[in-house]
Image 1 (cartoon, helix red, strand yellow):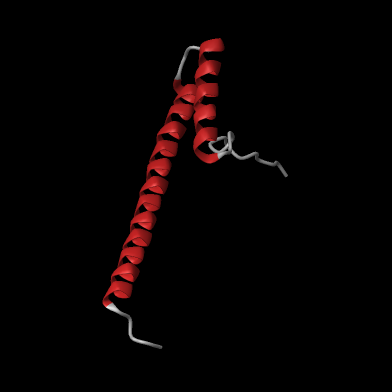
Image 2: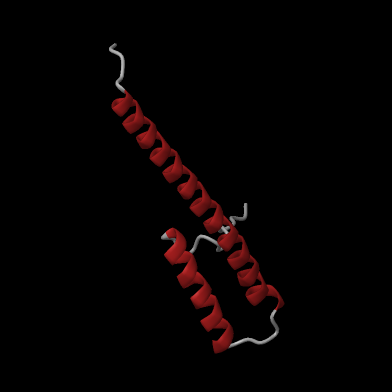
Length: 87
C-alpha cells in the first residue's frame, strides 16, 4: 500500500465528508418522515374514533391523510390497523 499524496488525501477526505453529509441528510429525512407518520396516525385516529361528524367530509379527510401517507411511504395502508383474527 503506497503513501497518498496531499491531493489524493484531500480528495479522499472530501469524498468521506460528502458521504457522511449524505448519511446525515438521509437520517434526518427518515426522522422527519417518522414524525410526520406519527402525526398522521394521530389525525387518522381522531378522524375514526373521536370526531363526531360522519359522512363524506370525514371520508375526504381520511382519504387525504392516506394519500399523503402513500406519498411518504409508498404504502397507503401503512397506518391502518392490522387485521385481527379470532380463534
